[in-house]
Image 1 (tube, one colour):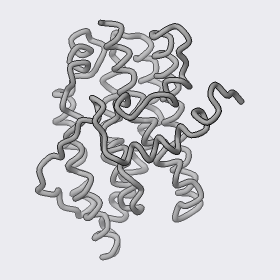
Image 2 (image 1 turned 90 degrees about the horizontal axis):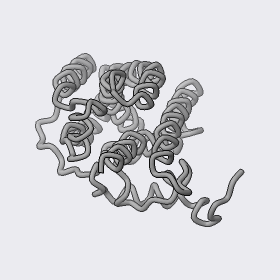
Image 3 (image 1 turned 60 degrees about the vertical axis):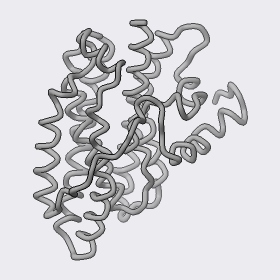
Image 4 (image 1 turned 30 degrees about the vertical axis):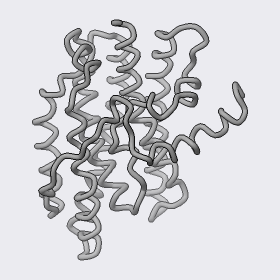
Length: 251
């Protein structure tokens, strides 16, 4: 049971980065400027690098013929443990940057807490990944301010995106049984501990962006236990196509 919970926890950590990384990869060649296009692509590559580290460890725990590729490409929708926020579509750049910022703020605090994990492998992944995520957060926070406090049109689009995406952030802090177990063992994060810091950080940037925190109820979101929006099915049909069409293919 203990080993299985650690495996499931690694899926949670990896799936968030994997699905968001795929969303960003969809934008390659479509950025508003060359610099921004390259930055979004590099963030996607950073996230996939983190996924590989988590899934290599997960495959080692699972044993048998398990591999990082099989974990990434051969699971069904209800076996994915990502939060619903990261699977939301690239509606426009306002949604892209808002989604990125809301995740980056959580991701930074998550990794800072995981730096002291009793699991040495998770600890090492967190220390290495934090250097990348520090940049991700600076990048997305700058775009929040730039567009939120920009033109009348950019402000309106950012507010629309925030109204849609903000209610999803509460899922970060709804601890599953797996997360509670990992916390009790000193392996996982204390979600209650980082929740206050998260909302302070997010609200400061939102206020600096001249945006308004929407007065909406948290969305019913249970992605961490495998209940997803229809968006994940579209993502997986694209993401997993090659591996399912040509089983066990290698480059």
